Each structure stands twice: as C-alpha cells, then as structure tokens.
Image (tube, rainbow, N blue to C red; front, side, top):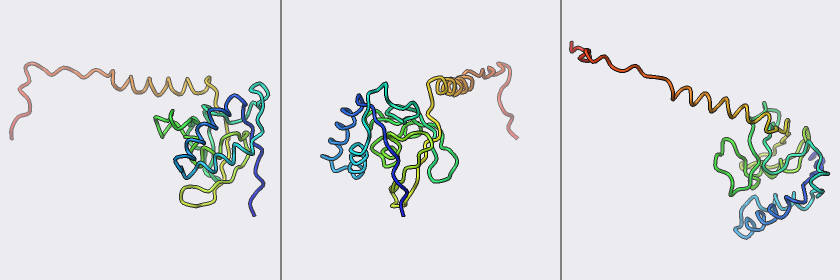
Length: 164
C-alpha cells in the first residue's frame, strides 16, 4: 500500500511560471509533465508571506534523501531553462524535482524514478544563502589556490635530462 501523500505548499507568485513550464512541457509531450501537473493541481497555494518557512520552493537549495540513503549534496530546485549544471541543479521537470516541490522538511513523498522503481524522497534541510555562500567560497578558494600555485622557473644552467 502506498503511504498517504504529504500536503504541498506553493507560493501564489510561483504558480504562473510553474504553470507556463508544465504547459509547454505537456505540449512537447515531456514524459514527466503529467506528474508535475498533478502536483501543481493538488498543492495548497498561499500568499508568499504565508508559505511555511520549511517549504521547498523554486530556486531553493536543499539536502534530501532518496529512500534511506545518506543525504545528497545540496542542489538547487530550478526551472528547466535555468539548469546549467546537473551536479548543482535539479530541474522541476524531473520526477525527483517534481516530487520535492512544495514539500516541507522531513515529509516523505513517493515517486516512480526513470527506471520505474518506487522511491521515497525526504527533504532533510532547506539551505539558506548564509549556508550556501560559505560553501561556494570554500570551493572557489580551493580552485583558485590550486591555480595560483607558483611553478618554479627552470634553471637557465640546466640542460635538461641526461641521456643514459
């Protein structure tokens, strides 16, 4: 038996772009569009200021579990047109993205993955910019430190390796 579906909460300000996205996907016969549309239809739409603080909304960064695995690295729930990095962004037009949209932290949402396997997704943490920016800075610093390492200049008197 399937677990009961959790309540979904969406901001009224996000409904027009979400509906536009799903209608375009339905017109293109995208295989995940019907699932996203069903989620939008069952969502509780509220004013932005009334949206529960722990709700996963568009452009949020989130840690989540699929089934009972360890939390995935944080990713941003994004519109398909905005997705540029699959490692850091999750399109709302994927089954996993549509399943996360509107959930509250620790809710469990069933979905069928691309292989036809029944899964449960659980958002574990909604990350704020205060959390994300230090992570990004550390990653950028690590990249910059590596590229900024000085390579010693060759000795002008060294003729190179000696032949045996």
